[in-house]
Amino acid sequence: MSRICSGRRQAANRAARIGLLNVELEVHRTTAQERTRQTETKASFIVVAAGVLASAAGIELITTDTWLVGLVPFGLTIATVAVSTAALWPRPLRVPSARSIVNRWVDVDRSPDDLNDYLLEVKTAEVELRDEQNELRMKWTKRGFRLLLLSLVTVLIVATLNAVAPVWSENAKERIQAPATPTVPATPKPSGTP
Image (cartoon, rainbow, N blue to C red; front, side, top):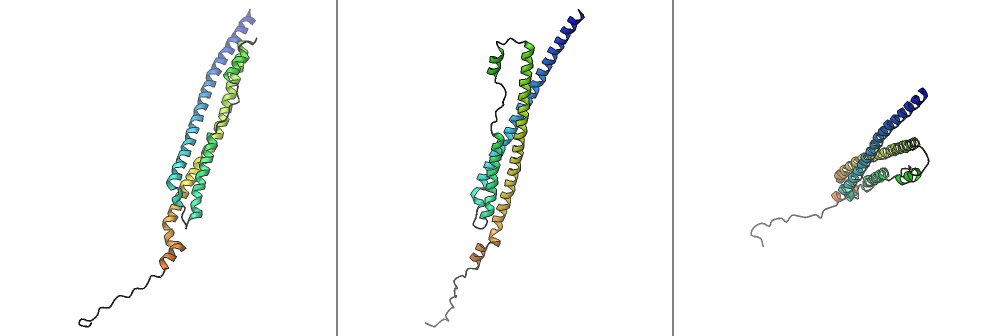
């Protein structure tokens, strides 16, 4: 009799553990999904900010005096968009779909405990994959933020160079030193002479 009670107690304890694990894995799954959403939102912000920066600064930064330096912010902005796009790129989760789980387990001759074990493993694998993907997305997003900041700094530097370019530019010196046509002021004639 004691073995029967012990077996029932173990089964009840196992069922309680599975229930607790299910609840905990749902919390982890929800947290991982929220991290994915937050990271994608940040990466989207970077893409939009890079677009605004490119359109605000754009071609005006490329002048005859600073054209090579003016291309740097443009290149950094393109790199920012590319890196942020990598963070946003959809990645598949290699876990069984809802349909494949139902198809696999609806008519199988296995215990509900076996199904619970399988579902726990599926949830665990999903959370682990989401966490791995989130780490990768966060790395790309951090790189995007760095590039965006670098783009902003180079835009400010190039804009400053463009503002002082007339002072040090050879083109400006040539314009300033170009000889003006001499004009001789007309001398007034004394009164009474024709």
